[in-house]
Image (cartoon, rainbow, N blue to C red; front, side, top):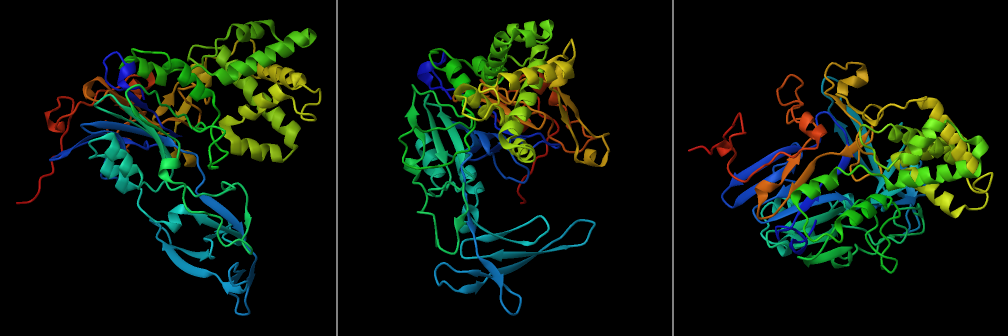
Length: 522
């Protein structure tokens, strides 16, 4: 979000594009609610009676995952009493105590009901393995200890008239933790991490001794102590799942922040500008440059220069040398770079972790496994690379990438395409699949797009001139494959266009059809 002092119009600008898995039907749908005292437009979730991310007549707000742990694991000492009941060693009484048992029944459509037994200790619910067997771990979870609805704060945001009122509402937001950016019709913007976050010194990273520790939480981190930026017309605020506090910050929130590359790219594109526009914010959301993979290419080319006899295909090397870091659809170099990255990540994981653990780590790290490799190439820790600097690893990965893509790599629009799959595709029924999203962007570009997840919707708002902004969605409003609105928004999504959603009653908008009008009974 950009304050009005830094925009051409003098009004604030806010952009939001949260990243989620691609699903069919899509996660979000567009909604506009108009009633006395209520004028709100944005994206909502099925079954939710309000806007989750969007704007009302005075403020706009967006959010991204805070990636902050709200769970602490305890390793319990477990056993059974003579009657067969599950027990644990209570850290308060130091006695073997029966676990609390709750029995649930899950009704399955067209099938038999499933019985589920839930066990708890004084710390929280006991984690069962995939077969339903008891494990020695219990989880303390904010949502269980403080079971408040996260929906209520969003419904209150729908009616908030000022940023101050909105921030007061976010004090009561229980979670999951989110990075909120907000803007108002006075040209001010603000940022605040919100959610009930345990003051837990191990940030959920390690299992604690449940037989000895009664409670590792020292309450919640105070709202005023969470990372934030005060409302200002001169502020530029952004969040890309990155760390949002400095080295002197008092609390330990997580070590699972995203890599800094996207945030650094956003900062470079926003700071220093004094006349930002809606169009520039749209272009920012579609920025497909990946500084992380550009760094990897520089490292690989440096290895080639140090070992010229092991240089691979000259044409491919020229592609890499000319590559500008962009994952645009027409780029062949981007396809080669992606293959290089995947092969280098696999080789790095195997070299450092060994056979077996490498696959598990890659599965957990997903598309973000590149970051530790780049750090290791910079710092060259002793014993991590057989040759000391990683050159051999990069050269082998480069040869493998050249071999997999051949003399003429495919364009990225084909190689990086995302296939949207209906749930029935898991059974081999692909008739209802909506189609492909051509490759455009990468896990490390501002325009995030991988084969699994990416921007789940895009919105840009200019508070006070709401008609200048708009939203875009990757599919359509309907989940029925034979409906006209099943995939009708996909072409504009692929083109990077926003559809305007101006204020006003929906039946007065020419583009709205059909209309279902609900009126109270006499």
